[in-house]
Image 1: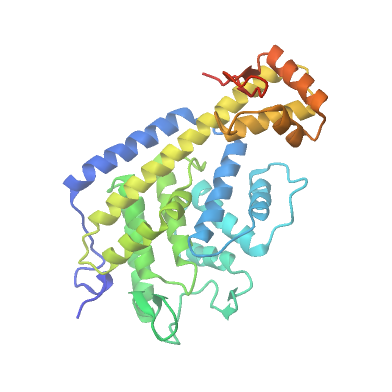
Image 2: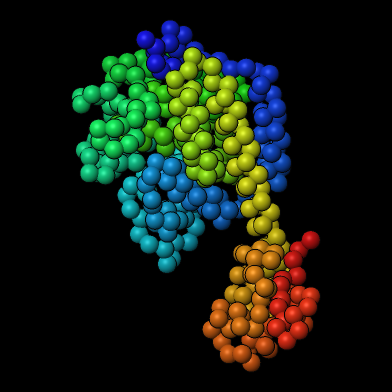
Length: 370
């Protein structure tokens, strides 16, 4: 009995309903175009932020919590940013960042078995996944039974997916890589990214790391579509926010007939949300730069700059009740009179504005860029 898509007679051929995909594809393309038009010169700091988020969340999707500061240190080193004050980098974190950077910056280089194995080996530099010894940098061998994705307590496990047997892997990978090469000029780039993710995670060629590598391959396909090696948005961050839906639609499609329309619709809509989220961050970064350009020639104390930066980070109305003298004192670690003088100075320079009402309990907010 056929249970999984790779067992169907038509595999690796898969298909979708083009009419159903027209609307989500159009919306994703529109969001992509708006972001690309505004980020021709995406600053390194923004790239660093996106790449750090991508590394953190692609691991978190698999239940692994990495240290953000260690990720930030690895990213800074690879992008040529200052690393003073950042911690040393753990090997497996550096390997993850190396894979993500290679997938996008070197998106024009061919995807090969050796490159895939190198990525997986970089994820597990000690040869262990947790306490379990694995064949790092090699296809799985299924010596202890079939590769399965399971959940639940021992004795009551639920099998979500079973991968093709190991003796099919060489053929499966060859077919996948040939499809990945030829499809670049034959399939819409966004739909190709969705299909690449699905095809690779179906093959599941490694003992561990398949999800992270599948998402890196999708990122590589998106970079090829955009012809841009800069990471402009984090697909993994959005997938993590929608993780239950992500696993649910993948499982349903794995147990389907080869029609992956629902998966592509979900992927395109998730991609659109990831791009719009990044667009908001880009605009926020530009507003912040605009604000600090305005402040460059103003004589401000460091504590004043700290407060202004904090107000910007939380956004309009982010301080419940506004910025008060008491809150200023707490954040700046200063006295009531100093806080009073600082606030008056910021008001006089047009940086702060007084909120309506309040009486003796006056509160303030930034004069926000239009």
